[in-house]
Length: 140
Image (cartoon, rainbow, N blue to C red; front, side, top):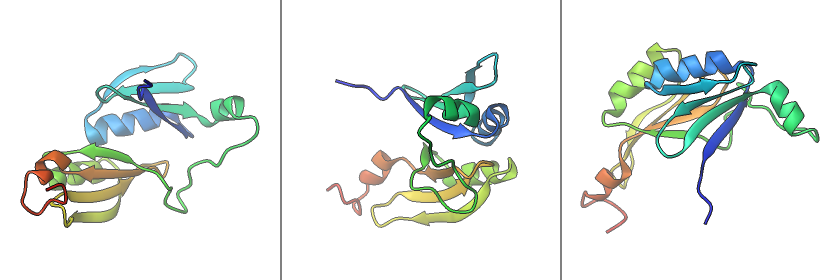
């Protein structure tokens, strides 16, 4: 069976992106390679990686669609937070752009959205398992 190893986003500046995620979400840097073309953050069993646009051109010579700040992408990074409001405020103070304020979903989970300096969409949500322990959860 395959295992999800790393989620990688191609970004304009790997170092600045790593610094943002360290500051905004308290993640720990694993490394940035000596060329500055690739870096990773520790996030548990799956790493979060960022690669330069130059590396994207090398890896995907047929072309690719870079992330844009003009439109929301069709994917997101999702972080689980014990206190969504506090985590959201911390991310915004670190430079994240508020996209959607915290909202409690019908299944009991609280969810908010921000974007990073590249335009990457980031969900900040309460623990789904904690939400599923409530009577209102769709899992029962």
